[in-house]
Length: 408
Image 1 (cartoon, rainbow, N blue to C red):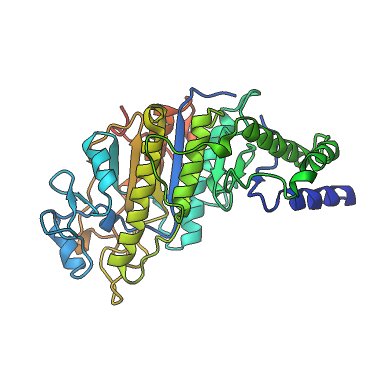
Image 2: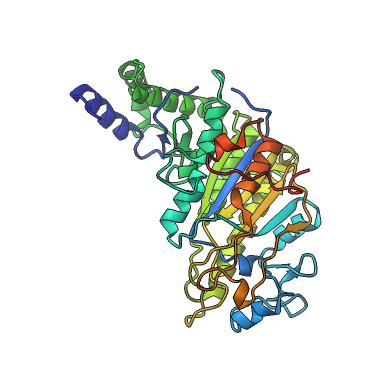
């Protein structure tokens, strides 16, 4: 692609004005639709250990494979699993999630993931976020593809919003989704006294129809809308407290602000990092599970009755090897676990075609099998909570069906 001097100068100016404010966007025209429901897609980056988060404590092979790192069975003390259904338990740090499960608001899908056998973080994340088996098939993420397929001329600027330090691949593509690091920092990089003049100059500079012009104007309009609705000043409700030292908690607090502001959000993507447990599994998974538990607990408490239209799905690129390694950790595996929480979820159950942990039942070099494609989980949530759409168009090489029983 060739770029002329004028376009280069405009690109440089846009980067200078927006680069430090946490803005990013897919470079295309912003095509309002939706039913008022919101899906928050939370990605646990690093390959979360599903066998620790949701230990199959009634499968004796679990303890044979992990003699020093397995989560004790329920009743074994403060570090023991919380019982779910007599076979599976929940990590002891996930107390809020256990309450959600007991209340019927949380469902768990075990032995799930991508059928692709990649053990590379980056490749596996790309595959899952693109929603395909071959990452070369398309550069468009599954969330962006859904938004593109259901776009209308009245779409909100915030319909597809990625929250974090970068735009998640799931949200990248032809549809002009919005990327925000934090709402407070989503502003022009200039002195306060200069911002209005800079805003006027940018609107004049980016007044054409090229994708870069559209992106710049969308960014400015989004800033105006956040300011007009005083979104940055919104405080957590219902006694919710977010850990200011947790990047996940801050991201979910900003997601709650957008939802409470009713700015037309339909899909919001969020990240949690640090889920790679090659050594020190017991301490590492406890830290990450504690953060996940507190952040999701604060988010649900904050939104209160608004959770009637919010569904959260939690996923990771793959699980961990079934047996522990010599460093008291776990290496990259295959099958993992997903969580669905909130509106429309048929909670209080673990859905799993459990493959077993006998040596003959493991995948490859000793991994949990994938028996439920993650796209069946996402597809079930999309069909239940968002707009009707052809799932084969959202997930081009997936011919399966939405996961039965997950949603009401």
